[in-house]
Image (cartoon, rainbow, N blue to C red):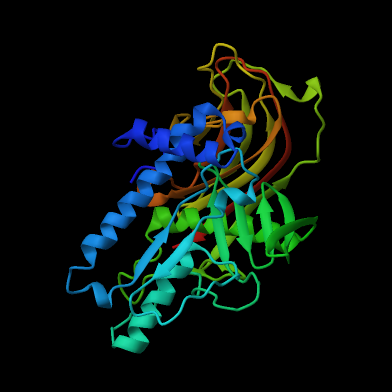
Length: 378
């Protein structure tokens, strides 16, 4: 089933012509760009695939005892409003259902697993673990609209800059509150500092979990990372450094146009042998002009400065990778990095540094720089 780029599916010309004919019958031909005909026609192919699947599955003995879940990962139109990009169908169907229901409450994909495990445990005696690693608690089946879910979201640039948290929507530092009128979701701008902090803390802890196997209980003495919807905590951590810069404006005096290997150091912080890992979280606004020739990159780098004078490069990250439509405008950038001592091998006397590499001498602007560095003790 192909409803995704490159939209390569069998009998494409036939499905596309059928779609065009349907647009003509409804007087909607001028509402769709011709370049999008093949894309939208892929849904006709998708419908046929679903129809064939269910027709074949009905002959299988387990059909009557099966629950089917149909959903998507993001919306179809990349130019949609930011919130609509995450609005996808979620259809749960089974021959065991007695009647259909539509639930207006907001849910996320991460709500599905807790609900199904609870169903199998409570109704079918399936053994479930006493400790689970997910944060959400399950699908909300309220007959009226409400938003109690929690779900961070990735943008096209693969950066986690959006989040739904209860009644709030976080979008690159901006906060909105949900409303529901005439069966349509609305958002209203507002300020809510606890949501901004939650997003910051979650990204730092998420990176720690991914890089330190924090959800794997190896033995009774292994420290665990505790996460909840309302707070993030790590066992025995120490805040090494916090830095907040004043807001700057689009002014040439703020431009960094340098050609050194390490043109602009964001920070240089001592690390200690007693730290199991170091988590770095920073966010800032960046303005990068459009590059006619392409291929020019601004890179964020990490390195360890050792007492003997050697500098060990740990990792580099391209800031304008998959930048898409974000040139010639201010764009919010977030970065979280977890550095484990078992992998990086830092020791007392070492200094962790983060810097911009700008070898192509691209003129770019930085403002609203915020930094937090957390060290986790062994």
